[in-house]
Length: 260
Length: 140
View 1 (cartoon, rainbow over the protein chains, first blue to last red):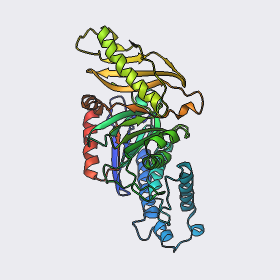
View 2: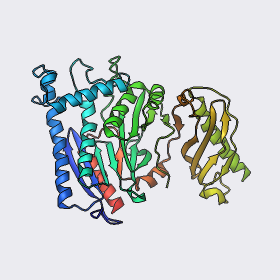
View 3: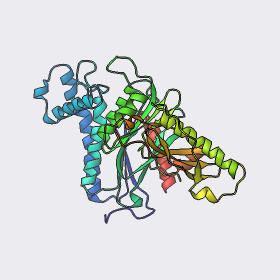
View 4: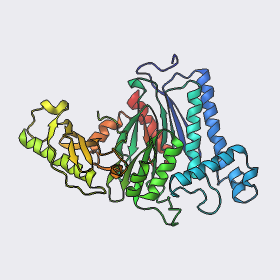
């Protein structure tokens, strides 16, 4: 790309508080007017997702669905699409991901990854082919061809805050981590209603952030043994888990960065 | 040199066992390890030489297993199964191998080279902004 930052160039960064977290963008491109406009579109997309899907905003479509004021059939097409994704997530995760866990729809657990994947794609389609989007710890990177296009993502160590457990490398993939560290034990097994406590953290890598995020959440619920057997059935996705006793386990194809 | 190799071999065999024992429990023969990495020409006498080492391929009743380990400062910083019994669906049940925790020295060295961090939800804007500024310095 003619607008790529030259070798040694400082990446262009933007951090946007949205969806209850911070979504940061790193672009290995010069900030041309076209890419500035694309970044503004990507940021707007995230805020729009917040407005539509947040169960914390009383006027959001999801809040109205949850109160029964809006029927699913009457919801906007995109909302219906997201609810269908939630159903697909439920079946792909053996019920470990359940957007209807309390009997009412709450696509919260899927929307952040879904929206961040779309935000990344807005930039990609505008010509920003060497970009990292980090939505509160869930990462989507798309790198240019060649060694310079590789992105290195550190994985936070759940046992030692501020330190890294491992580093993964990829040119075009997602890295999503679910865990108990920052918000306490907030993942509940929808099948038993009990807090899922077997794992401290689960990281999933794969082609799409939407699914990597969903699978990481599901892995926390499934626990190390079941999750590692299950992830094999999902082509392109790999898993790293850290159990409460500190044992880390990885899929054989987990994309660890070459040590250096 | 012989003692160093034995030390490495014992560790690699331990990893192989972890790999092969979950969830099955075949007997895994000891692995002979030949240095193949940049550390193979080292002459230090204080323990395993830093570098990357690939173990022999070992036949288990589920198929061949081969492990590559990276050593730094006498510790395993990485272990990767380069061959696993993945030929058929049943054997692929050997899913997930134990990963040694990386040492803090390695992490310090690696954190200067990372572009971003994946972790459980960051609720603190200050945290991520601080992280970003650190990364900017590292890349600047």
